[in-house]
Amino acid sequence: MVTDNKGFMLPYTFLLFIIFLFVSIHSTEIFMMKYRYLDEVKSRYEREAIELLAVKRIMTEDFKSSGTFVLNDTKVKYEQLNLNKEKVALSITLKKDKKNFSPLEVVYNRTNQEIVSWK
Picture 1: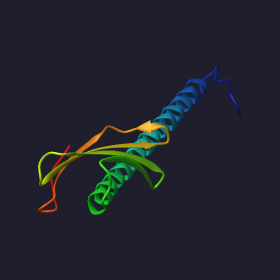
Picture 2: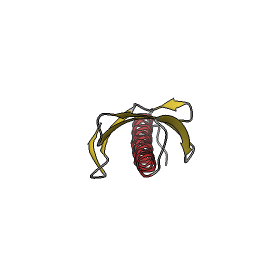
Picture 3: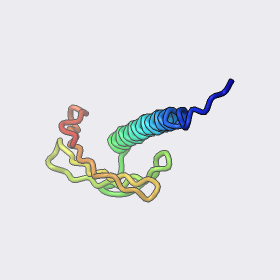
């Protein structure tokens, strides 16, 4: 037979609901944090790959002292400055989806065909 519990189950129901709510919000926040991290890593990897491809293209081909070209949906703007007979300084700026990335400074040695510094 059912006896009158006078609200005995109500506090336990609220406690169970609050625990469920806390776990679901916490799980959602962990998922979003991982998603933002992976998105940031992906965009940084893509930017670094474009930087490498742009530097390689500028060094291997005979470009003017300044100019722009498009590489994988990214606009690459560059300027060359001859430091001396063997060293060239490159200033490279990338623009993708209306977002400008910080300029990249590369010093290249023509005789050894290697990069001296990368900032």
